[in-house]
Length: 395
Image (cartoon, one colour):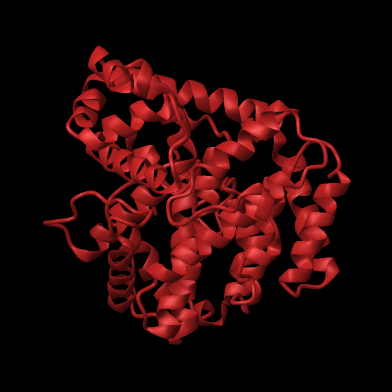
């Protein structure tokens, strides 16, 4: 099976149909395998699918098969069947419900292809790692670590027969605010830790992130998550966020203990989550560029700033043209340089900038899950590129 060529999903499902043990696999088993493989941490260094020993998969290919197998196991566990056409049709309907202007997902034109090819294109779009652009910084980690949210949203869709968009939005809100609290829990933050917290706080799309004066579990609705896998996923992503190359400080330790308690998980589950992240990093530190840095916050900010600067310069003419067509966006961007925008104005700027990014293929990374973390830097660089009329509008 070659995950980079057409027909790989049909081949994958044909192989599964001949495997009598497939219906015995559970979400719990697959989640543990995905965590060990690095998928939950945003880096699929292994595949949970047994392949020909002569085939060497790229990280993107490993991520594809890991995501797809997790989705298929969710289907088989819920429906108690493995019917290839129904499984593909179900997944297409699911992703179709998520493909709205308010969602994370922006898919290519899928006309004139069969259902399995459509699904292959969707999966491909979902797992593009853009390694040459992201260079595996924190945004890359968060983007791919959020892929498991697809699996949880699909499970919700199958069990409840409801549109999963609201669930997906709520899960993103929970993860975003919880990770923000975790980043903010560090007892002593240096300049770049504070920059990352501010960058993170100003980047959400679905919802409004907590302000520092309201940063507590009282403002995060965790009680709605009853499934153990949902709880573990929130815990694991937060453990990843607070990782550093030294022991967690007292603030981070207290936060993680409090999070485990809020999720009604035993202490050993919280400790296991932290230990597994540390273990994964130690084993694969040489394979993941981001983890080689003693100050990930500093590396993240510097690398992300360079990334956004390059992207903007390469797409300068198209970007200026698209922005200039939105008078309201021009005015708000100009005013943002001389005063603080209101919350509603900031939402308008983010929404309209994302609409602009959708029209420029090279800026698709801003639309990916986690890509919103780059928006504040995009806003920072834009005034330097716009024509003199923009400066006149500011005065």
